[in-house]
Amino acid sequence: MPDYQLAHANVARMRASIDDPIMEGFVARLDPLNETADSSPGFVWRHITAEGDTTEAQVFDDEFVLFNMSVWESIKALEDYAYRSNHVAAVRKRANWFEPASRAPLVLWWIEVGHIPTVQEAKSRFDILWKDSSSAAAFTFRLPFPPEG
Image (cartoon, rainbow, N blue to C red; front, top):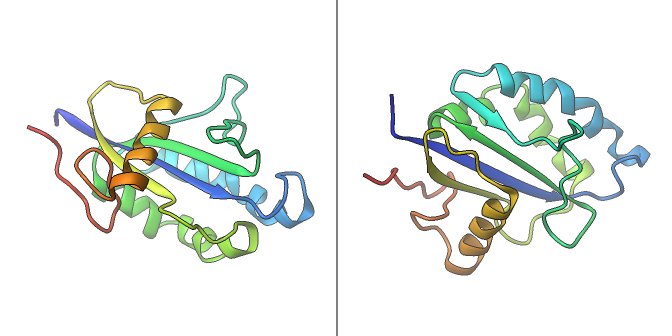
């Protein structure tokens, strides 16, 4: 068993509030996408609020920014979910629901097996990525780094 797992977080700024009709197509896909992720090979954990909601975490000072965080056994496992599942259809339609990103909307970092990342930890990794670009502390699919050790 590996000593490290991959933590992932992404953000997207909605074009309207989550209950606006513009967002219906996205909202309709949430449960199926989460079910696919939860049953995907290599999936470990995903962030949900105490109320069981995946859209309520407000990480940045903008109620229109949605936050998602998960843990995977490897980069390949996350890539397979992101680019080889029903998730792809949602990605192709993201412009319908989300504004274009002005900076990296996704951050990856390695964690020790068993560690559950916090929302604050994800926010700090975004800060590192946005300030310093890709590094071993915070990277993207485009320029991945191996786990420490």
